[in-house]
Length: 138
Image (cartoon, rainbow, N blue to C red):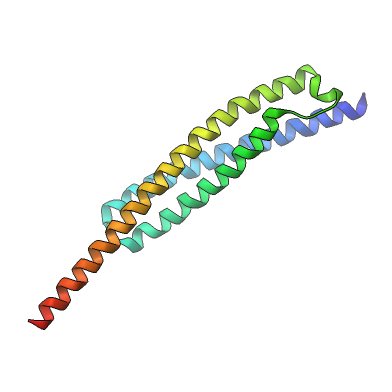
């Protein structure tokens, strides 16, 4: 009985940690989107690089977190897994998994958008540099 209670308590703490991580990554994603939008406006490949790296890191962390929520949603084994509290925790984990997957899809979309903007900025810089070379030759 006591061991089951300790296991449930540990699971609750772990779930709270996962939810805190998800909230933190959601905030990081929002900040990254704002920084990314500003960087895109600049049109500079160098300016775009930093938010692109940050958004990519956030995306990787979200992917890892979604896997943890998947495991939590699946639940444990043994008698402790069948308690009302454990089932409630599984339901919460499923809910957070949905949220995590939405954020992950959003993050991946932002990364692709930033990669495209970076590529365009590099190409524009290359064209500008080629134009300058032509000017010097004339």
